[in-house]
Length: 497
Image (cartoon, rainbow, N blue to C red; front, side, top):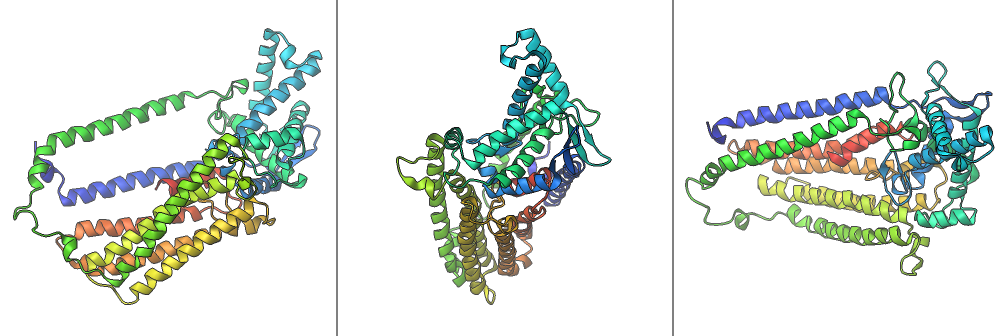
């Protein structure tokens, strides 16, 4: 069998690379299209069987914005995405509504609570519960969801619980807020909790309602909730097993091929003319723009240390809730703030390290600094500082309820989505900064692109540089009121690509 140098010629490697990118991005876009088409519907209104309107689409969308403004994914989670000190709000609502509905039906039929009934009767009521909660009453013709009287009562019970929790009025709610590491004073108004409840109910409805013509819910029976029959589907098990086998098979194939070609690689690793007598870096000319990256790496170190410190504080809040060894830090920097900053710093210090490395390597390859390169490097550094300070200040103000306007919160406060928490203005500013960085790197290494001997490697660097800049732009493809399933799809691009 031919060795790797024959099988994987440079031309074939580029073909394999191009085909892989085409298949992978094609697959991502295909499933994105499926998400757009199959996302859970947001109703125009949720009405009772008597015709009373409980919530409207505007309530649900406003509730989503209010949830974002409280820290969003940094304070509990929705559909499993977020932090896990506070509950998953959709799962919590679903469970509480199921329990409330069981009690309401039991009292109506027998005058006893569900817990006091014998096991056979409990089993019968569970079947009634599943039929009630899993039946899809969404009317596509007018966009309404209809709920009957018992379920309306259950919704009211759960809504009162969440209103009390987020308004922080009762002693019990204060205890829960401490367990959930929620801010002490950053509470919501009654009007805000009504909209928040609309959003939470809708996410729970999507998690427990069967898709039209199917026996599984809009969220494929997530979360696990035996009370309403939410258990993993056959497809979940099948694709999980297939994924594991493909992963193990791929790793095994790579290890086998590496072992097979190891001796050839070791032989080819010795240059025909022998190893260089001096290090390439020893003879490199250090340009002004390369020296200007020193402050970038200092910022990287500072941001990294800050992330560690905030991680320690955030982890401790998970134990004490609203305490830190008796220090009143939570009054100024609650859990949702420190976790927002902690996760945001992961993006910022890694991004800054990428920027600094690219800027340093570009003239190293190109051999010189283009005109205005140093100015561009310094301008980008100042912009990074403005983005860090500005976005952190906005997030702090938003979570501490100092930005009452939800549109201003979205643009300058917090978006509430993990790793892309920064306000949209700062997100756009960072994207422009990344595009500026792409320009600085490409113009710095431009002379080297004329060298034929190393063009393949340099083209890969160019491709990686452009990709880093552009892929961050996926986070701009959703807006303030975008469906949460679509938002999560584009957020996934930013986090993973």
